[in-house]
Image (cartoon, rainbow, N blue to C red; front, side, top):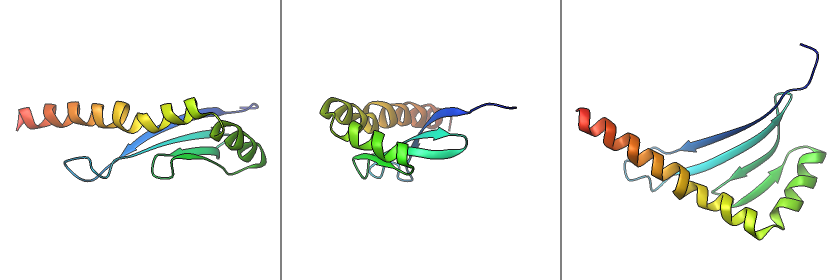
Length: 92
């Protein structure tokens, strides 16, 4: 119980059947506080603590990292949502 907790949570959010409103969000969390967040709607990292602001500034300068993160909306979110939707549609 005495220690530190660090995690990364990735979420895909959508409400339309064609996934046109798909958003990819990745939160970097330390001790239950979001330190840095990437949101595909914003298109870059946003820091919420001093360390998070520092990391966001560094990561936003890395064009390769930004390109990979922006691609996750299609490569990760839409890809998996299409698989799940077809699996559900096949059963109805």
